[in-house]
Amino acid sequence: MPRSRRVTIEERVSRLERPITARRIAPRAITTSKLATNAVTSSKISSDVIPALIASPDFNRSIVSALPEVLATPAFDRVVRTVLPQVIAHPVFDNAVRTVLPGLVASPAFVEAIQTANLTRAEVVASPDVVGLQREAIEREVQGPQGAQGAQGAQGVQGVQGVQGSVGAEGAAGVEGQQGMQGPSGPPGIVDIRFSGSNEQIPLVNNQVTVELTLTPIVLQANQVVKLEAFANVDFTVIQSYTVNSILSRNPEDVVTTNNEAIVQQANQTDLSQAAATTSLTWVDNPGPGTYIYSFTVTGSVTSQAQSAEGAINSRGLTATVIHISTTGTL
Image (cartoon, rainbow, N blue to C red):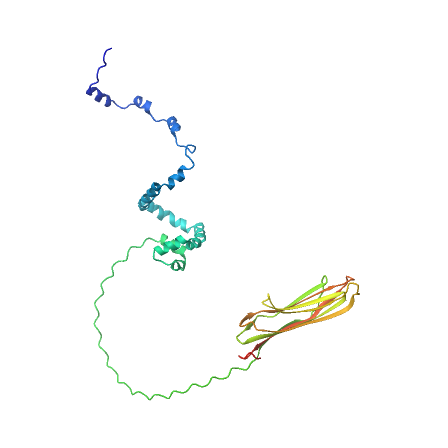
């Protein structure tokens, strides 16, 4: 079998120097069909690849090393200066900051960051408007460093001192008077009187009636009390039983005192043709200094076998007398 001829160095070099043509590239060209076969798709990526990638220490070190360079680029700086003021000025951003900022300031990480920066949390929270300061700092241009203080100018020539006038003779000191004794405090007595009342009849409706009297606000000073007096007259016709409840209140949820008038008969007894009730209350209230609103509420209710009961609350009144008492507590 004949031996093949060895290729000389000149022939090898000539082959390397042959021009690159489409015919030579075509067998090795990268086409879309070849890329599609080896393409990275979501089905080929495992669900735990990205979390594992982010959790890798190398990924964290890459971000830490690359981020300062990215932030320092002029392009990033221009984007921040152009876009960030508009984002911060947007109402949605402002509302989001006001919503998130209280929780951020209260977080342990924020406190730790403030302590690291040698600030106190109170100094940051007590600022007039944190969001406003952030917006102003971004919208205005960065101010350059303050220049060195100039040298102090030369001191001017001191003016000529004027002629000093003669000193007058000192007058004799007057005799210091003794402090007088403190006068007695004013006598205790009535400071103010308030009244509310009416003679208008308020009839029963569905066997029940309620009226209320309210006084204008009363301002109490130290060593002052309020004497409360209230009454109401109620008449009923053709009833089996009746109940009249009266309440004195302060502001108005605080009940001061109450009273109850009632007549209850056995079921087999006949209805009363007429019945009258008078409820009255007297109370000295001492709530201390402050502003108070007193009211008097009367509620009447009846039962009747004939289902034809009638009645009404007639004359009623509420009187409040503001009294100044002595320091010993006597009126």
